[in-house]
Length: 138
Image 1 (spheres, rainbow, N blue to C red):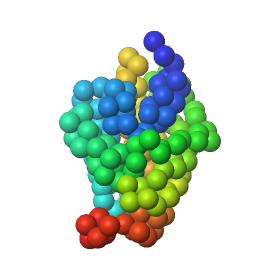
Image 2 (cartoon, rainbow, N blue to C red; image 1 turned 90 degrees about the vertical axis):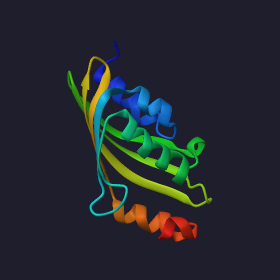
Image 3 (cartoon, helix red, strand yellow; image 1 turned 90 degrees about the horizontal axis):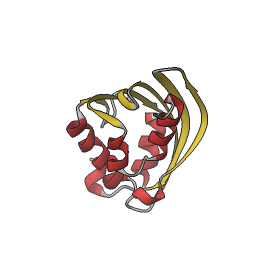
Image 4 (cartoon, rainbow, N blue to C red; image 1 turned 180 degrees about the vertical axis):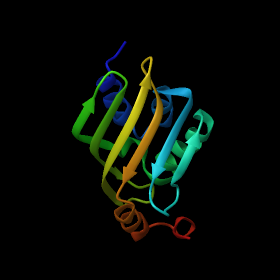
């Protein structure tokens, strides 16, 4: 079985591809996206709910193949880990995006069962709204 650090590293490096992200999760995983009052923040319970979030983000907002992760710090013990990284991508409408994220996870038998994600939501809104199509700006 992979180390906790290896699981988390592989998890964030799979960003861009919903199926790869979901493969790292337990069936009853809980993902809490902390964005203040910005959408799509909230708590997503179970793979099906998380799949909806992933498909919205990595398909509706970002071009999956453009997503790149630069890990600045990763800390792990036996069943918990955290990572700080920059996610860079190109939106589906061609704008460049780059933001710093922090993720904290609990891992059970090599799968993530709880994920807390933090990002600079103001920076995200500013970058994503700049040239967004009208249907995404409302």
